[in-house]
Image 1 (tube, rainbow, N blue to C red):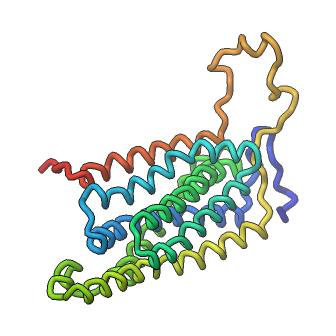
Image 2 (cartoon, rainbow, N blue to C red; image 1 turned 90 degrees about the vertical axis):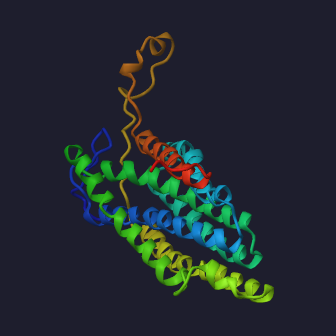
Image 3 (cartoon, one colour; image 1 turned 45 degrees about the vertical axis):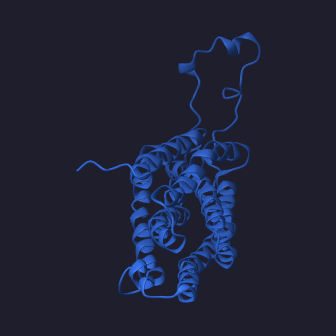
Length: 285
C-alpha cells in the first residue's frame, strides 16, 4: 500500500481503513447482485426457447446456488493457503470464464451448456463473496468491522438493479410474450426466432465481461494488506497432549470461515425459495 501510516495489527485488522482499497473491494458486491438478477430473466427466456417444464427451468437456480454451496468451504481454504486478494482474482477469472461460456452455449443452442456457464459463474461468485465479505470487515479498525461490511453490502442493490435493467433492455423483446409471438409462425420461423432470442441473452454478458476485466486489472495493480492473524509464538498450534486438552471454546473460529458460512446459508435459502415454484409445487394463496 502507498500509505505507510497504515499498520496491520496482530489480529489481522488495520489501524485505519485504506480508502481506495475499501472502495474497490466494495465494488465487488454489485457483481453477484447483477448475476442473481439475470438468473430470473434467463429462466423466463430458457423456458420459452427450450420448451422447458417448470422443474427443468428451475435447474438454472439449482446450478447457480449449487455452485455457491459446493465451493464456499474450498474457497475459504484457498484464502487460508494464499490470501484474500488471490481468492478474489480466482473468483473474477472464473466469473469471466463463465460469462465467456455463454457464447459457445448460444452457438450450440443446448440448455446443458448454458447450465455449465451459470455453474462456472457461481463458482467464481462463491470465491468472490467468501473473500469479500470477510475482507471488507477486516480491512480497517476492528471497532468498525460491522460498519464497513454494512457499507459494502449497500452496493449489492446497485448490481441487482443493473441486472434487471440489462435484462429488460437487452434480453427481452418488446411486445407480446414469446409464446404469443411464436404462435403464428411456421417451424422455420420459430427456429430462427429462438436462435435470435438466445443471441439476445449474450448481450448483458458482453458488458459484464468488460466490467470484470477492468475490475480485475485494478485488483492486479493495487496493493492490498493481507489482513491475516500474525503467526506469533502465542498463536502457533501447541504440540502433543497439550493441544488435545484445549476445549473447543478456547479455539478461535477462523475469520475466513465467517465468509463461507453465510454463503452456504445463502445457497440453501436460494434453493428453498426457488424450488416450490420451479418444481411445480402450488404456492400458498
